[in-house]
Length: 194
Image (cartoon, helix red, strand yellow):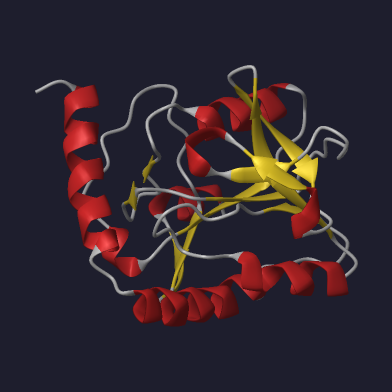
């Protein structure tokens, strides 16, 4: 089986596990994960979170904490098949995006995040991240690094999304940190970078 097919098989299995969580479980586990994620916030930073789709973990409870620390909040937007980050001010400024997402509209300025918290479909303890198959985050992180900006990175997911191994390709970027309701996981890639 090729890597693309293996990734699709893992994605389908893990997303089925995630979908099996009930709304109350998702809300409770999201709040627990945000308690761990909040410890990573640095005052004054621009932080990219995401507007959840379907049964994804919900980071919106952290929005006020970022602002309270003097930070700026950015949400991803897909423009011409590339990911950018736009300033988020309030829900009224959101418009429908790709894959059922919501993102700040064209009047919202683009921002360069200091800290990117990425959604994911699956993860492993080596920092392997399986997204939704388009490579948007890998591409934008690589683009930021090429321009001399190295944002801090973390993945945010439910613990049930962990797998033994995420197949990685040359363009895939490992995450040094994964945050779930069970806590903060410094991955093998994060330990190597210390």
